[in-house]
Length: 241
Image (cartoon, rainbow, N blue to C red; front, top):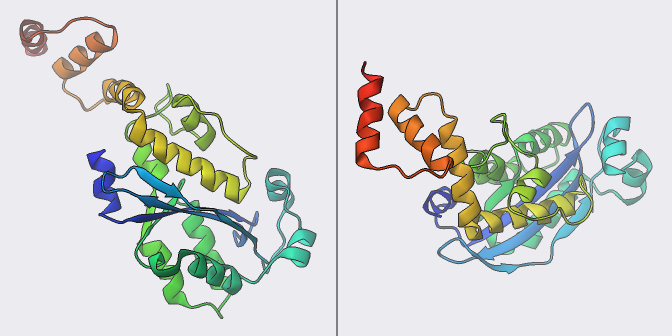
């Protein structure tokens, strides 16, 4: 997909990243990351084994987040590592690709979590955080240009997968599972061009800024009608009356 390749800017490696944060301070409490090698055409060459880390926060997790993720303050106390260690683990996991890859997330809330964690942890190298921010790619924003729900809103990750005839694997709001399912969405965007084309036509037909003749042609096509030059010219004529 040319538009996707343009966003990736010729990188050879992607890091699919999902972060969980505290309810109020939005500090990182969990990180899931999966390294993926891609070919020149953007297709997946290899999905590497991912990493999952619990991260100690300065503030409490919060009941809402605990209910969603299952992560408690005791979990972080017993099994969590400092933010600087979690970042070092990610850096080690990515190796030489740390500064060369794209960090793929679903939405931009993960960037807020990183920024907030940096604010609460002054012992972390700011440059390492900036690498992730600089090389960030929001797959949700990209996919929403081509696929939206009936009300023209962005899908959740699980519902995006359903559009492409896939089921969410694992537990939602588990950072590693979310990262892996984000890989599956990326793969589907590359492979299921049939579904992508059909969904994109729906999105185009709902665009209000399209000229009326073009909108009418798209509606006819979506309804399975055959449209020729004469019909298009008639739509243009009527729009000028």
